[in-house]
Amino acid sequence: MNQHRHTGAVVTNVYNMEKYRMKRVVLFSLILGVAAVFGIGCDWTSGGGVESWNARWNWVNFSGVYRNPGGYLVSDFSSAGTINETVGNTSGGAGGGEPEGAASRVESFAHDPNVPSATQDLRYTPIVPGSVSVSTSGDISFTDDGDSNLTGNPRGTGSIVYDSGRLTLNFQGPAVTQYTVSYIQQAPGAPGVQGFASSGRVSRTPVVRGSLTLSVGETFVLRDNGEGGLAGSGVTGTIDYDTGAWSIDYGTSVVPPNTAITASYRTQGGTGKGGSGSSVHTFNVVQEGEQLSITDNNGAVYSGNLGSVRGTGGFSGDGVPPIGETIIAQFRATGVSSGGMEVEIAGNFQGVVGDAGDGQFLLATRQIMGTWVESGGVTGDVRGESSAVRVDITDPTTEIISPDEQAVSPDLMPPAEE
Image (tube, rainbow, N blue to C red; front, top):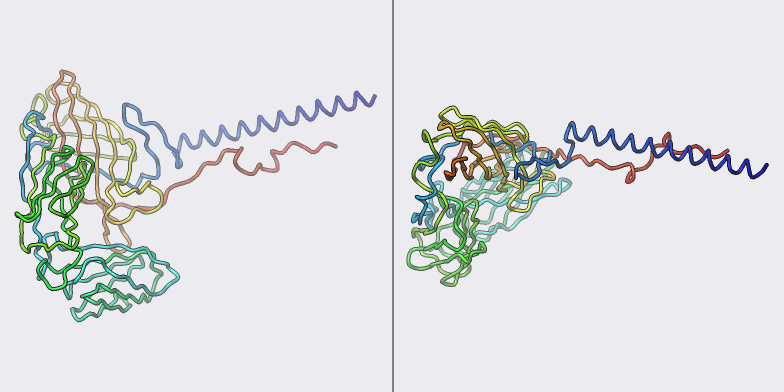
């Protein structure tokens, strides 16, 4: 009799555990179903050779009209060659008025919102009096009166030591989590200049690895090592082959003022018309999440999607990207050209995160770079740029946790044995 009662208890417990297991399976299936429908923080495959897309990048916006100021948007690969151009100047216009680029400095700093003040040593000195401005995440801005005093708007005070770069800010108002400082470094030749650097972009991308030579007059000649580094004449630098962004760090070397910086490099892009049929000068891009629609100036439509997205500075999509971060997104689209040829377009969109003020963000310097491949074998180079747009950057990441990783709901627990 006791054996029968024990066997019945075992059967009942097994039955209850099976019901519990089935409820967990159903719950997990429902969660996966919701994630599949709404894409809540999950990766999914975009297909067609483009990698995965993630909902944390939904703020990215590459919609707009793209043109190539230098010629055709779709050009012929066969006309690609060596590019020789002037890409900067060591003085950059510093010493009066807004510089052209070389001496214009921007630095961003994170800040503890519980601390009402900040002290920071700016990197590039000496600083041109009256050139300092500060924007903050708390909607407070500061301006330099040219006599070392900073005035906050709508409130706040501060100071700047032009020779050493020592910056002091007193925030009076909303909590500040980040602030960005823009200023002009004195041009080379000014007394006490140290740590001077030049930076800019070449006009054509991508740059062929190992092909770039930067010359600063006849004083410095830097050559590309094929791995993103530049070196020569006792100074160093960097090159981003995808974006064309370059930099030179002169260290302790004496930099000649008002000297042109020239670049010689090779690129994959061409200058002649690419593709069959009518020439392509513009792309009208409409992006909704990962979905893309591209219409050229001849009325041909190409449909596709974005794939994986990354920040060149290491930003992974979690939280808010730093100002100045370059965002690169893979894409692929297919359609039929005006010449009646089936076409696949694949490559990258890219843009730079900017500060629009009032706590808002821009996606600026937007570009499309890719390859045009026709079913008949004709190929072309795709290069275009579009104007900046405002973007609403939040932290959209949401983590889905399986029932095996989360606390089990009490109503799913097996009933206690009586």
